[in-house]
View 1: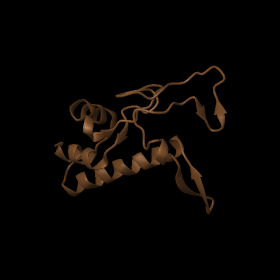
View 2: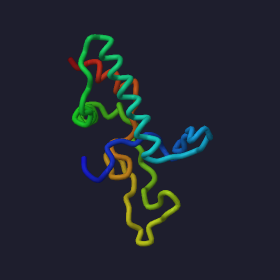
View 3: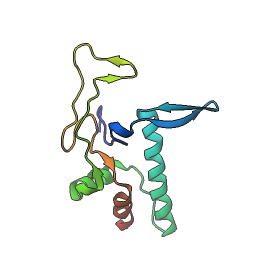
View 4: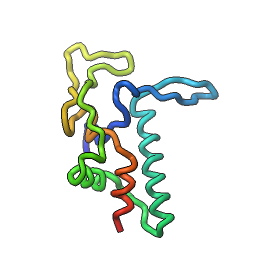
Length: 125
C-alpha cells in the first residue's frame, strides 16, 4: 500500500501495449495501460465467482498479499529494470528504485500468473 506498486503487469520485453485513442492506434505503456488490464482480470475473477454463486472480491489487496505469502508461483517475479526514467524524463540525481527478487518498489509483488490467481480466488468461500 502507499506510494509504491503492489503489482506489475508485464516485463520490459512486453512493456508496450497497443491502445485506441480517439480512433487512432497508439503504443503506450505505464499505469494508464496496466491499471485497466488488471481491472479486467479482477472483473473476470468476479464473473467466474458470480457464476458459482460466490461473492465479489471487493478490496483486492489483502487477497493479493495473502496469495503472495502462500504461493509465490502465482506471480512472475520481475528482477530487472528500474523506474529512474519515465515518459521521456530521467532523474538527474539517480533517484528511483531497482527491481530485485521478491517484492520491490518498482514492480511490487510481480505480475499475476492469471490462472493461478483465478484458482486461489475460486477456492475462497
